[in-house]
Every structure is written in structure tokens, then in C-alpha cells.
Amino acid sequence: MIKFGGKSMKLLQLVILVVVSVSLVVSADEDAFLGVNIGTDLSDMPHPTQVVALLKAQQIRHIRLYDADRGMLLALANTGIKVAVTIPNEQLLGIGQSNATAAHWVAQNIVAHYPATNITTICVGSEVFDSLPNAVPILVTALKFIQGALVASRLDRQIKVSTPLASTIILDSFPPSQAFFNRSLNPVMVPLLKFLQSTGSSLMLNIYPYYDYMNSNGVIPLDYALFNPLPANKEAVDANTLLHYTNVFDAMVDAAYYAMAFLNVTNVPVIVTESGWPSKGDTKEPDATLDNANTYNSNLIKHIINQTGTPKHPGIPVSTYIYELYNEDTKPGSVSEKNWGLFDPNGKPIYTLQLAGSGRTFANDTANQTHCIAKEGADSKMLQAALDWACGPGKVNCSALLQGQPCYEPDNVASHATFAFDSYYHMMGKGDGTCDFNGVAMLTTTDPSHGSCQFFASDGMNGTFLNSTLSDMNSTSSSTRRGHSGYAGVGLLIKALLAVLFL
Image (cartoon, rainbow, N blue to C red; front, side, top):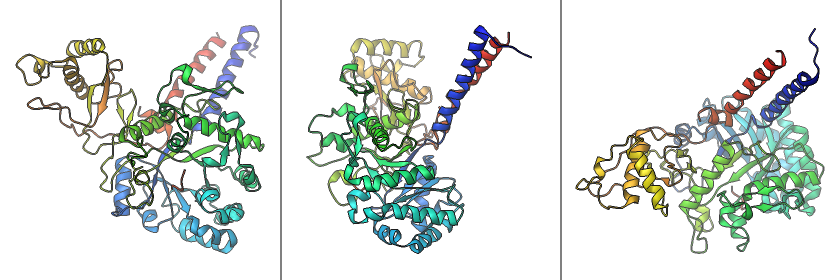
């Protein structure tokens, strides 16, 4: 019999602690994912088969529909794509007032398609508190009726039921530790949270830092809304918890957790059903730009992929659906309302999503016309050092930069560095980190070729976008709008500890 004591006992305790901690983290985030919403307010809406073809090409494996369109559900059959369907607000009153109507809806829109179509979630309405106040009293009843129909069909364990809420129902959201739900909604929020708790469902929240920023009258800095890095003295600090917040998204997610805790609910996870940034706006929306949309969604993707979590729940990523797949040109409202999409109806990217600082492209430009250029305003000495490295140890053929050669003009360090950076980037197969050069390089979809100086052409390599789960991704590396390669080392750590323990 093996006896433990002293250091050996402490080591055993450490092993147990590591095992338990890993199991808790894995169970907490093993289902975390990135997905996209698919709206249909387009004058030239692609056929469902075309939509599915785009999803497959982009390796998008989680989607949310704003209805239960039969054509889409049939096209999604046998693809493995996980689908969240929605009961539109206009159908909510009927379902909330009739158990039979709810059962018929489930039979027609869920049972008829499952399991060929991998339906995982039913969203009952959308932002009902704001958009359909007269249905608020029957909202929880509608959820229960739909859940009952799933139980009767023996699908309640496979399909979860919830309702997307606007983040505006959370009041006093900063500091997050003081957040609470609008108290006038408590008669509905309390039974709603109890329902989510009893069924193992998530609180669905639509988070739009764009609107928080726009409505803040300058209080919220743009970089704080866009996930851009902040100096320590610019971070927002929760005085009650001393937790530091570097972006609006995390603050709102944690505010939701604190608001639930205020109502004595601590075990319902948050899932973000909508988040994004518009790429175009009118004169009153100067920050609705391609660059800001690119920055926000790229940083959001990086935030989720890296399993950053939030200050309250570090290391536990929040499943998020990006709003949205297509620009919706017939959507009513301002210019920005029509321009939240990642693609146009032909499947052409509005912009190429990038992981900031890594050189990794996640939205696949179908022509794959990505280039690496010198960052505007970069220090000239750092550019020169990077240029010297690329043309030396980097093994780039820089003969085209010699005097009299096609890429000599313009004769400045930024132009020459761009040629060397782009050559290296393509030579290395556009791999991770190959467009960084100590921070003086950046990706662009604009070909920097000029005159007789022709840069690398597209090499036809396939990019990827939103793989299904974080484990998949890591292993390969408010209006009514609508994992774990990193754990491999832990096994080695446990083995090492055990080896020491039994010496």
C-alpha cells in the first residue's frame, strides 16, 4: 500500500486540484462557439442552397434564423450545421395563448425536420420587452408550451428553449457589480430565469457596443467599444470588485451575470445572440465604417477564440452569434441598419475579417486578395530594420527594389518595406504571424501593385471563417435585430507530477 505524507501529499493535492480545475473549465466552455445570424431583408435574397453553399465554403457551423423557413431547413439537412430557429414575434401571442398552437408549431417546424436538420435551439420571439410589450405577460407561458411540446416529442434534451433579450433591460450596467434588471420586468424575469434554470438553458442577450458608444455622448471611448487595446490607466475599473474592463462587450456580459445574481440566480450561462458593427452609415453615424466593422468583428472573434472570457469569468468564453451574414438592403431605418453584413448577396465579402496582430484571416475573401503592407505612421527605423530582416534572414528576393528596377520608385522605406513584407507574407503561405514584423505591418485587401511594380497575385489558398467550436478552431490554430488543444499540456503536467509523486 502506498502511503503519502509531507511533500508527496501536497503534490497529490496539487494533482487533484489540477484535474478538478481542468474538468471544470472544459465542462464550462466545451460547447462555446461562434456563429452568424441570417436575416432575409434583401432585394435579391440568395436561394437557400446558395446560402448553405456559402456557409459550407466559410466553414460556418452555427447559425441563427429569424424564422423557421422550410426551404432553409430543408437545405440545411444533412450538413451538420447547428441551427437556432426563431418563433417570430407576430406568432408569439397565438403560441402563448394556446398549448395546441405551440404543439402544432413544434410538429411542423421542428419534428418534421429533426434530426436531418441539426436544430439545437428555439428562440421564442426576439427582444419582446421592447418590440412587443403586449406579449410580455404570456412570454414565459409561450416558452413553457414550446418546452412541453418538445418533451412530448422526446426532443427536450436535444433542443433548448430561450428568448433573446435586448441588453437595455439591464440598468446601471457599469460598474457591472451594481447591475440589475429593470425592476418593472421582475414579474416576468424571475419566472423566466427559473424556467432557464430548470431546463438547463441559457440567458440570450443581444449586445451592441456600437449603440452603447453612439448613445454615450462621448463617455465611452471608441477603442473601448471596438475591443482595441487600452493603456492601463484608461481601463474601466469596477470599484466594488476591482476588476478591470477593457471593452463594452465583457462589461455587458458580466452585468448580466450580476443582474441574475441580484435575483438569486447564479447558474444560468449567458449566450450572446447578436453582436456586430455596421460597415456604413449616414452623416450622423461617422463611426459606422468598414475599418471599424472589421476591427470590432475581428477583435470579437479573437476574444472568443482565445478563450479570454470576462473579468468575472476568465477563461470561459461566451458563445456568440455575429450579426450578420448578409447586408440587408431592404431593411427599414437608417443606412447603418442595412449594413451589418459580412457578405453581399453574391457571397462577396464586404471586408476581410482579420485577427488583429496575428496576420490570420478568418473571413475568406473568395478571391483571397490579401496583402501585407507597411502600417501607416509606423516608425521609419523599425520599418528599415524589418525591411533589412526580410531581405536578409527572411530570404525575400528584393532585387526588384534596386535602382532602375520596377519597384525602386517611390524610393522610400515604407514603399520598399511593403514590397518586402508582402513578398515574405506570400512566400510563407499567408501563415499565422507572417504579417507582423514587430507591429509595423498590417493586412489589406487592396493590391499595393503600382505601374510596372507588380506584387504577388492571389495564390488561391482557402481561408477559414467561423469553425464550429473553440476546440475545432484552436486545433486548427439594440434594435429588434434581428475546445482544447491548449489542454494537451495539462495531461503532461499531471504525468510529470505523478512521476515526481511516486519517485
